[in-house]
Amino acid sequence: MTGSCFGLVSGHTIPAWQRFTGILIFDILNTMDHFISPVSEREIGREKQKARDLRKTRWWKDKCEEGMCYYCGAQVVPKELTMDHLVPIIRGGKSTKNNLVTACKECNNKKKHSLPLEWQEELERLKKKG
Image (tube, rainbow, N blue to C red):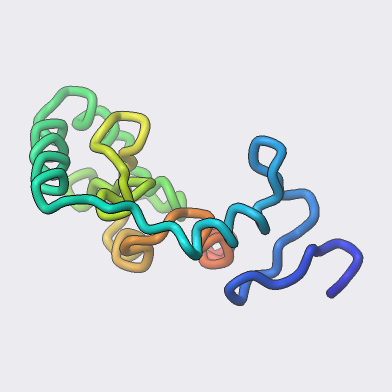
């Protein structure tokens, strides 16, 4: 452990400057390791339908026209962007505008059902590469 870090959590070094609403990311990651939201198949189906409906809206089309992956910042042809839930449906996320982002297929596949904080190292590597 160095003076600028709080230690390792799930293989991630957590820099001292990272805070989220006054709680260290260290604490958030520890909590998320045990976070399982009971989401029924019915709720999952309902949220997936909402996402399909939002894909047809002007709002989503405008987001895609920007042609940028939310995670790595890569410029992507709009029709190749995917819709990603910041908080995945299976983890209790909803299909709402503030939980949906455009993502390239590579980032979306790497993220899978993770929360962005759970793959912070990969995000930083992608942003440096891009």
